[in-house]
Length: 597
Image 1 (tube, rainbow, N blue to C red):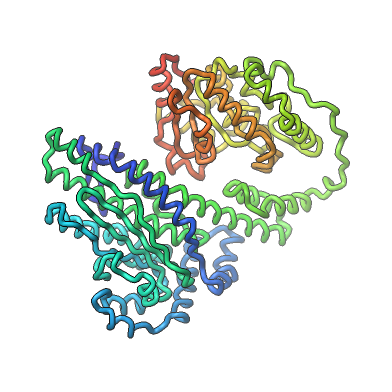
Image 2: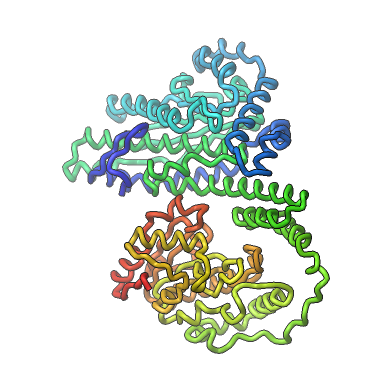
C-alpha cells in the first residue's frame, strides 16, 4: 500500500486508488530486483577522493575540530567541496577542441558550462530515451518529457547545485544521442575530472529497461550497467479487463516510471557522496516519508553499509586522538561507538584495549584464577529442548565453546551471568514456541543482559533498542509498557533468542564467531523443522540472514529495520510488528500474545 494519500512537491501526484495500489504492488518486485542488481554493480565502484584531497581534508582544522569536539559536520563538508574544486581546477584539461568536432553528440555550449561552472559538483545527465513505435506516440512523448522534468525537479529539491554538502547539476538535454549510440569513454575524456552519472530509459512495446553509467574523480574507468526491465503488459491487460480506461492506466504507468528514475538519481548521488564524504548522511535516509517505504528499503542497504563504515572510522579516529591526549574514558566510549557501527573494524578493539589498559594498569598484573576442570550445563537449562538438541550439545565444538566462555569468565567479566546463560530456553520450551524474536549478542554493560534478547531486569535503565521497541508497541497497539524484563513474553511462547549468547563486558561482538552462531542456527533450524507454525521476527540485516534456515512454506516471517537508534527511523517505526504477530497467530489458530504484561 502507498503510505500517504497524495504526494506533493517534486513528486508526481499519486492518489491512493485501486489502480495506483495495483501498479505500486506490481512495480515493487521490479525495484527489489533492480536494487539487488544495482548493489552488485555499485560495490565494484569505489568513488574515492584523490589522495591529495584526502590528505588536505584530514589535516584541515575543520576535520580536527570535528574529531575533537564532534561539531560542525557542515563545515567539514564545505571544506571537502572547496578542496575538490581546487583539485579540479589544477587537473582540468582543455578539451574544448573535442566539442566542436562532435556537435552531433554533445551540446557544445553546455559542455563549456560544465567545464567552467560545475566544479566540485556531481553531474547527472539524462540520455534521450529509446522508444520504439510499438506504443502510442503521445504516451512516449509525454513520458520523455515527464522523465526529464521529474528528475530535474527532484534533484533541484534534494540535491541542489548550490549545496555545500551534496551539490548535483542536472542536464536534461545535454546529450543528443541515446546512451547506446554514445562512446562513453570519449565522453569521459571530454568532461575530464567531473564525476558523472548518466540515466537512460529504453522502451520497447510494453517494457521499459533502465541503464546507468558512472565515473568518479580519479579517472578510473567508467561503469555502465543495465538493470532489470519492467514489462507491464500483463498488468495493463488485467486492469483493462477490470474496466479501467487505457489512457488512465498509461498515465499511472508514466508516473511510476518517473518515480523509479528519481530513486535511481537519488541513489547514485548518495552513493557518490557517502563514498567521498566521511560525515555525509544519504538523503534517501530522510525520504522514507516521501517514497513508499517498501520501495526505498532495498536501496538503503548498500548506502547504510558505507555510512556505518564511515561513522565507525570517524569514532575510531576520535578515539585515537583522545587516547593520545590521555582522555582514556572518552576514548573507550568512542571506540565502543566505532564497534557499534562496524563490529569488524580492524583496529578499534585493539585500540580500545590500549585505552582500557592505560586507564586501569593494575589489571595488567593480576594473575588469572585457575579454571574449573569441568564445564557443565544443569538439567533444568534445557528442559523441553534436550531431546531435540542433545546431539548438538554433545558436539566437540560446543564443549570447546563452553570452555572458551569459562576461560573468559576467569580473566574478566562476561555477560550474562553463568546462571542466566540459557534463560531463553528454560522459559520457552520447544513445544511452547509460537514466536521467535532474534537478537544479535547480549547487552554488554553492567547489569543488563540476563539471557533474553532485548530484555533487561527490572530497575535497569531501558537500553535504546528496548525503548524504541516499547515506543513501537505503543504506536502499534496502544499498549504502554515500562516492564523492562520481558520474561512474561517468554512464558507465553516468545523465544527471545540472541544468535550469540555471551559477550565480554563493554566489548560488543567480542564472542562473535566462537561457535554460538552454529549452535543457534541449529536451534532455528530445529524450530523450523519441528514446530507446525511459528512467527519469526527478523529485525535488521544480521537477523534477516537467518531466513535461509526457515521453512517459509509453513512459517510466518516478519522483517523490518533493527530497533537500534541507528536504524529505527529507517523502517522499524511504523512497521507494526506486534499486531502482525498476533494476526498471524490467530490465522494459524493460536492464541495471541498479551504484550501488556
